[in-house]
Length: 213
Image (cartoon, rainbow, N blue to C red; front, side, top):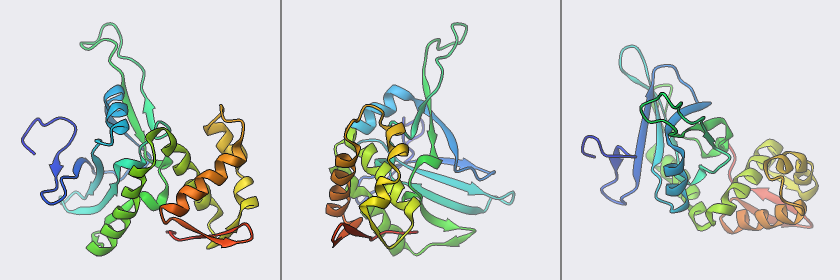
């Protein structure tokens, strides 16, 4: 995109998807600084936020790692509001945000270059397409969907049952303290993940995970 374009650096000429690039010499997939918190929240609610690319380079200016984070995985839980700038600052009261990358499901961190080796394009596109399906989930519910997906990652089994998911109720309760019917919400999210192709019902209260790292 032209210089000084706000919010994103690249736009795909085929599908119009937008991308923002953060480059770093020291590879950090924990937390990065982003722009205004209110602008990011607004963009996410409207499904117009850019995808995020984390580019890690060597002292010789060679690409070592390139990770794609689809914009749909950014929720209020992933966005961390920073403190307002002091009254002495040029933009007093302005509130920025951090993107807490280690709160993103591991499978949603799509590797394009890994330790200087290019990942096959077909692999990248298949994973990207899978996660873009989350756009069908209303933004205010998407955090729940991703949190349950994170629970499935912790279970880390091809087949699992409801009791294994229920065992993580305390974690989900901390993330969603206002919810008073956690088990019903968990079952609802498993149905959503089934409809999106992330899991399938195996019968008798058992499920199969269809995406694993």
